[in-house]
Amino acid sequence: MNLDWLRKCIGGILLVSLCFFGFYEPVQQLVNIPNSIRVMQGDQVALPKTASVSAMSSFTNKNVQVGEEKGILSIQGKAVGKDEVVLELAGLPIKKVNVEVLKDFKVIPGGQSIGVKLNTVGVLVVGHHLVNTAEGKVSPGEKAGIQVGDMITEINGKKIEQLADVAPFVQKAGEDAKSMDVVIKREDEIVKTSLLPMKEKGESSYKLGLYIRDSAAGIGTMTFFDPQSKKYGALGHVISDMDTKKPIVVEDGEIVHSEVTSIEKGSGGKPGEKLARFSADRNVIGNITRNSPFGIFGELNQSVENNILDKPMRIALSHQVKEGPAQILTVVNGSKVEKYDVEIVSTIPQKFPATKGMVIKVTDPELLEKTGGIVQGMSGSPIIQDGKLIGAVTHVFVNDPTSGYGVHIEWMLSEAGIDIYKQNHERAS
Image (cartoon, rainbow, N blue to C red; front, side):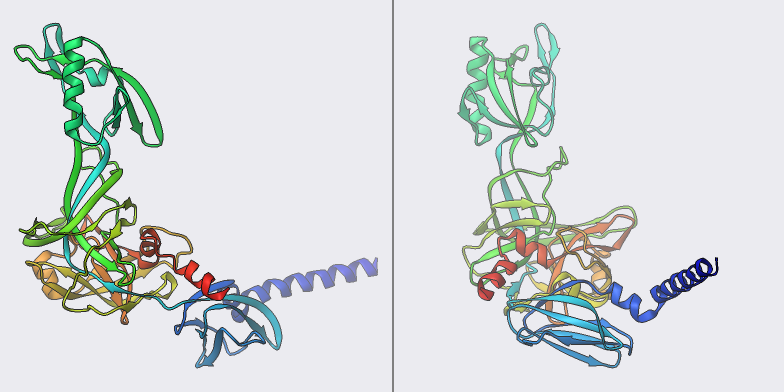
């Protein structure tokens, strides 16, 4: 009986000690330190620590350098490759942090206002309408099961690339009173249907009862380009069709210079907007190969300048971005790129791509006076902090036009086909 009691006492003491140990500040800080860290070559990551926690790099000391000063543990990337740092408590190894040092990478920040023209895959259905036939009002397209947002890619076995490709098929099918075989792309699904055009009363032409479009145009802001590969990224968010609200599937497209003609200021509940026109010469400066949640991407056919920061600039990974002052580059008048102050209100150190990585707030009195904050057309404006490109403006808060979201540059680079991790692996091997 006494032995059982003693065991229970010891067990209880151990349990209470373990619980208190979990609340011990050095232990809590060790738990909060990530198991793996990425750092650019030449950069350092600072981690808070208590005086009881110490660290040492691996025996090779090849890729990283560890420093400790005033309660801060710093890990600096010395050489491209992988290393590890062992954290100690009271002389005992407690935690191992894997460190991957990436090759230092630089891009040229943008800020220029650009005109965007997208050519879609096939033709996009943006609405239905009724054809007033001799038998009554009907929409042949709706009757055939074609929905808003569908892409018509083939008619009678022939590929449809633009709006002008459709009309000859429609007229012939109507005159022959023979339905067309139509192939539709509906998100990730391929749908086949038959569609018989109908003649409007009092007219000689036949109609589908569909509103269709083969391209879209708008304006945005250049975020960055790589001076070596000429790959670029812009906008920071997907381009959706204004009627269907669905992302536009891009066959190809192009970007040109644009000039901001005026600004409609934003106010609570109503986002503002840049009003702009394509440059008079319509000089194409690059193509568009991708329209993704992180922006539009492609390659430039010529160098572009912002006349303010035209030298290659280092980038920051998502976990290196911190709350505090930053700047954006954007155009509010003509084609002149200017720098304005903003505040990084919050930032998320993301391990996987996500579109909303930062919350930013415009603090520059001049920009607030001109635009009221973030306006449509400002999407893609590069965000710079401590001399590094950290991301791009993406969305404005409808109820607070002074604030909005930003995306980390790490994910835009990946979408542009610039794999900073693969570069590291190739170098390390």
